[in-house]
Image 1 (cartoon, rainbow, N blue to C red):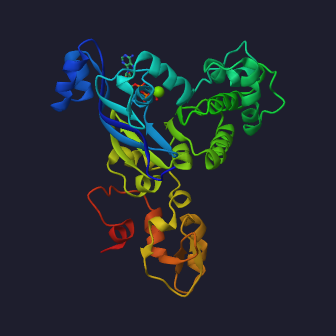
Image 2: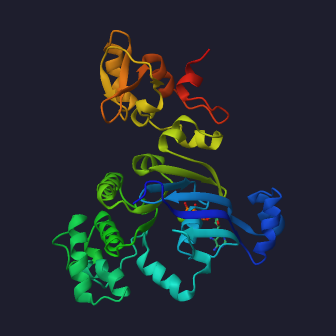
Image 3: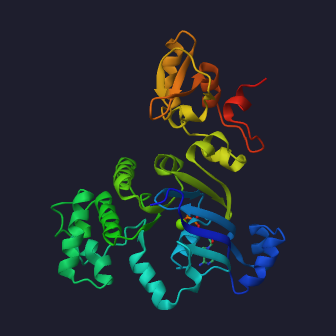
Length: 357
Ligand SMILES: Nc1ncnc2c1ncn2[C@@H]1O[C@H](COP(=O)(O)OP(=O)(O)OP(=O)(O)O)[C@@H](O)[C@H]1O
Ligand SMILES: [Mg+2]
């Protein structure tokens, strides 16, 4: 498992809905907006010039408002939607040049989807639902049930094998959906608003189940949400879509600390920054004091009382090996917690740019 392996590489992807879609790409390349394309040519812009490399074995979140193109993008990955232009490679294989047979095998073995509305078979039991992906792969139902039973245990549904979906709560149904996806052994999981239909507490539970499983399974997960808290909680990286275009991609810390434009500032303005920003993201590298040490991943809120208490109003930041790698002071923490400002034209780190003059 190489660390920087790219699982999914999307290049120059356009999707226009309408019967003269290819021609519309020229207008888009000339700078026409989504609104004008609809107004003048009665075509709907789905995606515009998407370029994204999705790393293997991580959770990549795609976020955006309703209609921004999230579902359209994820459905290109297993070619449920044909692009108007561009390319999609999965582990170096061009999805667009796959034959029908290859594509079918690819969908059965390499990718699994988890749907917002669960997508369970109502007349099949829980065990049969989970086994379904394997049966489609050609396994006997008996063997498929045996093989998939461990996944029911892993999502906490032991004892519910013979229940029907309608006898389960929403959260439990989505655990069936997750177990079904995992049972196929597919490396890539496509999750389109998979937890959005659930109550907030159940939703947080599901996020934690996913994160716990992911620590062990290292799947390549493309996770769509319109919920920033969810994105920040589970995403190793986040890409933000607006009107079919990716307007920023980066780590959760990048998005919060260096929003690229007003749209993203709007998105992140209600975030509890103290609970999200980690001290490693705002530290002064290399400067250290004789004083308390805190792990680099500690969030600002947890550090604040200690800083206020400390003699120099400053604490050290240590890496996971307990080596001091920098420090943070009260002024830095206070300005990081303050409302976001656009940082895009600024290559310096947040600490320098926010605490200067
Ligand atoms: N089959 C279609 N025909 C025409 N327009 C479409 C079609 N599918 C999607 N669109 C349009 O493409 C754009 C992107 O839609 P998409 O469903 O990908 O958005 P989304 O970000 O998933 O939204 P939501 O959060 O509501 O699920 C929207 O303007 C939508 O109206
Ligand atoms: Mg959608």
